[in-house]
Length: 178
Image (cartoon, rainbow, N blue to C red):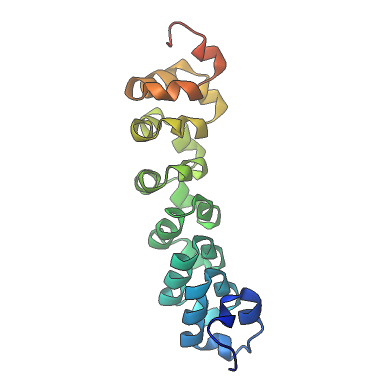
């Protein structure tokens, strides 16, 4: 193939390899381990190969976006990518972002994934309270209407007083909340 493995770390170099080279599992594995974004230029069958996708995501979590739809729906791969980079959730299936159990587990691994949780979860005081115990700033990712609703805010503040800084100014000024 004439390219050193060091040269293949660059997506531009890997992209310029012949399709037959980008179809060889050993070549693709080496390339995605060095730079996960090389998954984008792998042959279609190898983009579906779980070992290749796993190597790409562990190299660079946002390489997840180049995985096929079937893998982007798989909770294992979504978790693997999003626990390292919350933005990976942008490329996952929406059903996972609204799955309470999955999102509880994921948010506990990376609180920043909360901003991509379904609106129904970010508007659920019990879900937010559970997260706020460990990460008070989780309230920041809730809709503004919730942060201005005493019925939402009070249960959260009960478990995490530090969350007060993220509720609306109107409620922070209210003596009944403080």
